[in-house]
Length: 252
Image (cartoon, rainbow, N blue to C red; front, side):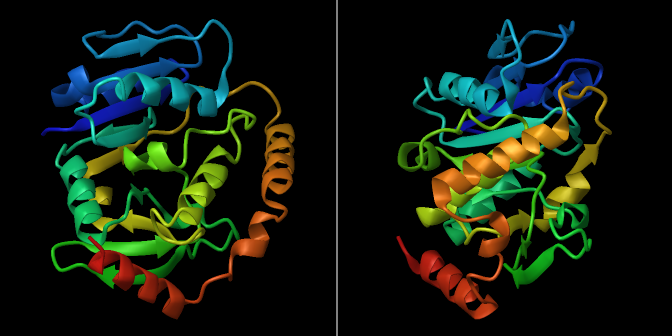
């Protein structure tokens, strides 16, 4: 498979080995960024980055992405959390095929538990693509994300002021503002992906207080955008979103 690159974010521990096991055919295209404890594993990968102190995901993603994009042949970037184990590597082609068909430059992994309203009713819209199905969702945990390289050219990189809370809210909002994917809070999910991965529970976590990190993230988001995420839920109707998707799929 040509033109792909993978960034794996890990906090160390046994999960990393499981994650890399599923990436065996792509290790030479994989950059691992370890923001936690040192872990022994097969280092036959493109690059291993281990910061000397905690950087948090935003900075780790940026380090991994910048390393990948040194290779000008890489067009499709996948960001993988080490809680995800790939059991069928055709998952990457699924993302690329849907991206090509829909002209969406960002695709996510979504589950009902990702509903930010806490209702476990995450899906807002289901779209039959013929050979696959796309659902649009209120939220995503962003454990597995597809990003075309154009995203980084037009949007830039992750805002490193976020500390393991809301960095994806910020980044995906910026992507939507540039019309590179679906409107914000209509996260596109490729349904075939679910049967090709296994989720493992978080073993390693950041030690500092989650509530403080979330509050910090909310403040940064508001400072940048002069709104809260809840204010953006109903900006677009289903009809609006369907029309936007039709317009995008017809574009060159």
